[in-house]
Image 1 (tube, helix red, strand yellow):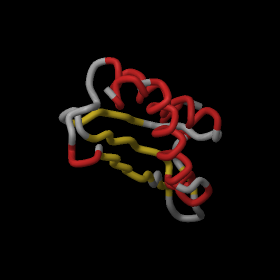
Image 2 (tube, rainbow, N blue to C red):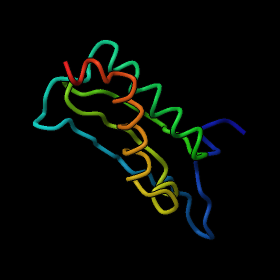
Image 3 (spheres, rainbow, N blue to C red):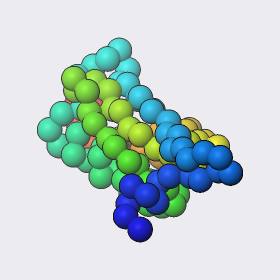
Image 4 (cartoon, rainbow, N blue to C red):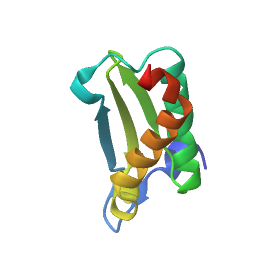
Length: 102
C-alpha cells in the first residue's frame, strides 16, 4: 500500500481524504520568517507533529510573514491548534530570544 492510499478513508459508499489548511501569521505581518528563522520554524513544527503523533502533509512559508500547513482533519478533532502553535512559538522564541529582544 503506497503513501497516497494510506491517506484515504473508505466509507461504505465513499472514499475521501479531508485535510485542514492552517495559516499562522506573524504579529503585524512583520517579515520575520526568513533565513534561519524559517528553517528553525519548519524543524520545530515537524518536531511538534512527531511529539504529538501526527503528520504535516505540506508546509510552506509565504512572503516571509506567514506559514501554511496542511494536516489531516482527524488531527484537528483530537489535537487543539493551540497546542501546535503555542508549543512552536515558545520553542522558536527560546531558540531566537536574542534576535527577538535585540
